[in-house]
Image 1: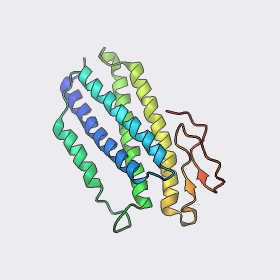
Image 2: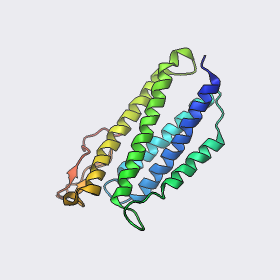
Image 3: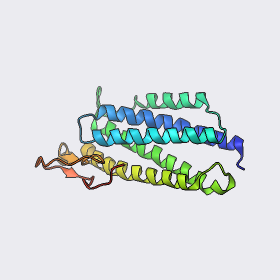
Image 4: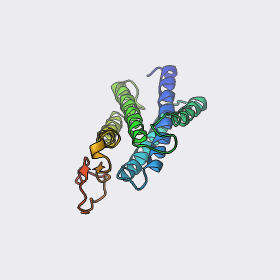
Length: 195
């Protein structure tokens, strides 16, 4: 069996991190509605929210109580992150998008580390399903792949003056690409598998 005290601390830390991730993804989705990033961020919010529910369910199976103080701290941390300067006195900027996608990439990478750590000790506790944890790792890997492509497009949007306004991260997973004839640079293949 696993060390319940240390496991509780570890899982509650990740639950707080997932609170930050969900709030950040929702904020980014809201700020990017109607842009080439909007549909992708809608998909990512759903993915991160589902993974947070998976973590809460796992904590329940393992008899780990949720720490409301850590969750509240995670929520507050995301709100405080909104105060970061973005190159504009008011409003959203291309740098805002870039920083948000970097934050989301960091959060999903942390979540992947969680699933890997638990899979590594799954043989120590029958309440841990190794195959399920491997599936969660695959989900996180796919999220990272897609965030990375959109983050690269956001970097071009933010920093490459010659490419501003003509860079598109491409269609969101599961959507069909339009044949508008615009000269955009797509980083997401229209044939990518839907989530």
